[in-house]
Image: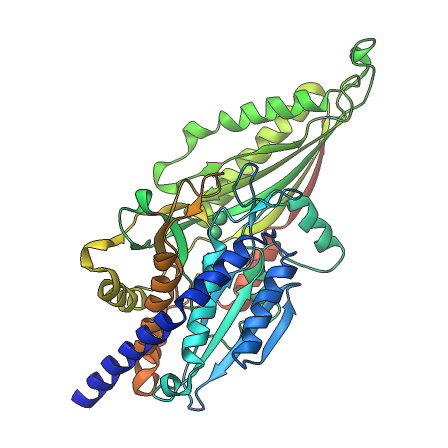
Length: 448
Ligand SMILES: [Zn+2]
Ligand SMILES: [Zn+2]
């Protein structure tokens, strides 16, 4: 036993040294991704960066998974669980961000560029044979597309063209069987240090969500000369938005409902009564029952808008992401390693988070962790969200995952096995896919 402890400590020291040696390279990768922001399912440049790095490391990879995803597997040659380290390829679209693409407005306002760099730093560390030789099992390094659930119309078209079935990268990976051989998954997200109150944080749960794509159909007419002969789809939409707001007092605090519609088309020509008005919205909540209940209230409110002015409305409901529930045992192993790196007082336990991630989907079917590194300033998804501390956001974040992997995979992968044995999956893969498919709904409501 004493020998094992010594071996583990020596291994951890080597891991830290190895990641430190290549820290500049890792940070440079993050900055390269930052300067090439691409929204989901079109991350071609970013995915090329990942492929180049996998090639440099001599890792065989599969590419073009869910359009832009890349996956490389590293085996120790000894049997044992397969642990995935994930980085998300996609950016957001945020006007006014310092690193926004001037044409597309794509910008890394959620720090995913650091995730790619962390994943590659861990891959680089374990690609060294003296680090890998004391471990059992396999590691899979994954660059996954489209975590941000945006550009719903664009993705809906990809879906209709048969290129996708679901609108997020990880659900697509699950559907395609790209995670069938994975037993445990981890990734690390960046967060704003001020809101976190520490350097590294863990949160037990996140909201899940459904998405809606709504089109109001009115009747165009001269907006000055004969508006009484038209049907104003914009008026229908604004009444619907008010009707959605009127539902808010019915939501329970513990369900953390968040509904935040945007109008993506408000009309076609100002001199014409708006006949084509479109809305996108999420319905988020901490549990599936509450999301479905709120979703039904939103549908009712949307129809009320149509009814009021005599318009029609098409409501397409799309499966979104499931609430995340992280694995306690895995998280405790991670926390001990995080404390070693940044000190006990800088590792914080956060509360339930009201954003959503498709890591939640994976958490339904396998043990996962989704910790945070407080490397950013500003507000996530806003124009001022910038990584201030790349050492923490890339290097320390990579080390915390790599040390956790060492714990899991040393001694014949005993700890990984016990995490898996203790973990109770909330769903099987087929139950999960069936649930997602059951959320699709395409309803056309005509007031007539
Ligand atoms: Zn985000
Ligand atoms: Zn994010």
